[in-house]
Every structure is written in structure tokens, then in C-alpha cells.
Length: 178
Ligand code: IMP
Ligand code: MG
Image 1 (cartoon, protein in one colour):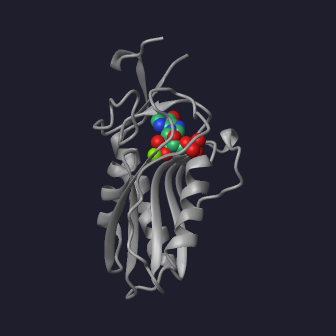
Image 2: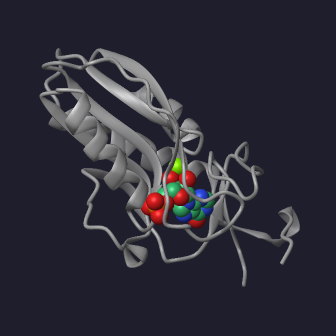
Image 3: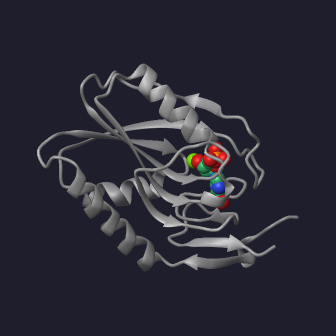
């Protein structure tokens, strides 16, 4: 079925998103030492809005890295494969790393990425922050350290998340009614 923006119903409005991201940043600020640098890694493209919003509220010294990964293509269901586009990262030896991702669905993408980072980057600590957790869709055993919202197994778009490349620019989260 072809979907368009008229079929997109609001699930989470802009203010609710921003308030929750701010309180999630407070949770993160409480866990990390105040004066130790962390590197936050943005998993493009879906995490872009969450990443920049979250970063503004972090109080410790912060460095930023960006990587590209994808698994969905133009479908609304995970296809079971991770397509890596750009995984170039520095070494992070002895440093703290926080991976920032839009959503965990089956868990395939983040299982792949977290393993890749632990094996290649020698960080002293690697944690994971996600905007959404679709817990009920999980096929791989992975849990985020920080999560803004748990959601049902429905396809959502907006605030970085896309449907066929569209809707990433929206300041709210919508869903398509079946
Ligand atoms: P996983 O590998 O099955 O956990 O899928 C994770 C990736 O699929 C995420 O990084 C998103 O880019 C994408 N994804 C999963 N669910 C949705 C959704 O509801 N809307 C948009 N993209 C999604
Ligand atoms: Mg993603």
C-alpha cells in the first residue's frame, strides 16, 4: 500500500518528545562523571534529530562521531540484514562511548553495531541510548542502557525516522494506521 502524510496519525507530539529527551539527558548526566569526556556516536540517518536534541542537554565534555547503517530499505519490516555504509571510527582507547540510535526493533542492527564497536574500538565503556524501544519485536537479546519511550510493534515515522526516505524532518512522531 502506498502511504502518504495524510495517513500519518500523531503518536507523540513535539513537546512530549523534547521534554522526555531532556529528562533522558538528566538520567545520562547522572550516570557519567561530570568532567570525563564522552564520545556520542550518531547512527545515521534515523538518529539525527534525537542525537542533536539530546546532545544539547548533556553536561559533561562531549565529542561527536557519525556512522551510517541501514537495514530496512524501503520496507516497513526489518529484512534481517544490516547494510553497512560507513563505519569509519577512531580507536576510542580508554574512552567512554555512547551510541545514539533512533529505535531498536528486532535488535539486529544494534547487536551488529555494539559488537563491532566492542571488537574494534577498545573503549573503556560503551553504552547505548535509544529514542524508541519496540520490545515486543525483539529477535536478538539486546537492551538499551537508556531509552526514551517503549512503543508497540507499529511502524512510526518523523523526528529522524523515515518511511521510504520521507518524514525525517517532522518535529513529531506519527504512525500509519493499518
Ligand atoms: P532492527 O535491526 O530490526 O532493530 O531495526 C532497526 C532499524 O530499523 C532502526 O535503526 C531504524 O532505522 C529502522 N526501523 C525500525 N523500526 C522502524 C520504524 O517503526 N520506523 C522507521 N524505521 C524503523
Ligand atoms: Mg536507524
